Length: 298
Image (tube, rainbow, N blue to C red; front, side, top):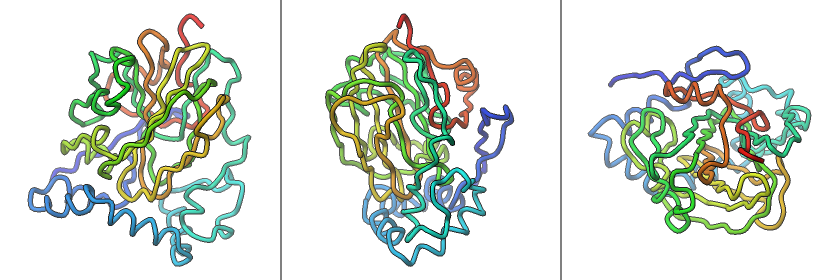
């Protein structure tokens, strides 16, 4: 089985590193081995296994796993508001809050910030409605957002892929007013590039939620949460009304997950380093609140 490493650029250091993937052997087997197709259907096209995992990670029996994951993934607990031993179960740790000073951000209304900690890939101008994730196959905004896609055709799009090591709360990248939202049922494929390279339309097939946010500076943007294997649920804590930049929008329970932000045509320009790395097919590790894009003609 071919092992093509997942390489990511660390924005803070400029260095490229190989991503540590929890359960990599099993993900590669499920998606890259033809004999594993029945298992792939059981694990990723049914919510049963992920629900069972979510129940276990929400129980007190999972507490012992916290310290092992902190060590394996080198998680900086100095950023958290509570020490590791204070969490009652793994999911409590997984959705931990961070100290406000751990994620500073620009108050300039023209600056759009990253909505989450994660690996970012940007598409500055969509060819019609198509975008192609790292090592993946062409995917469609129309398939991802079947009832609201037309206003975003030819627009811009950013994928923020979260891994188990990341802070799993997500925030509004710009201030505005929520004008619509919808939950869409679906599969729970892995969002890892290993799975994307195998062909499932993760953004069109997976369980997801979208929210439209109308702004004064960049038109209306769409914030999409995409569920993935092992994710107990997508929990949106802000679902209506006016929102400010960096207000918490919600959180993912255990598992790798993805946030997608879609902009109308001609409204934003992504940060230069994100554009350069994405053009080379490389994701950039970014923290929530860091510069992400700038509103055009704001």
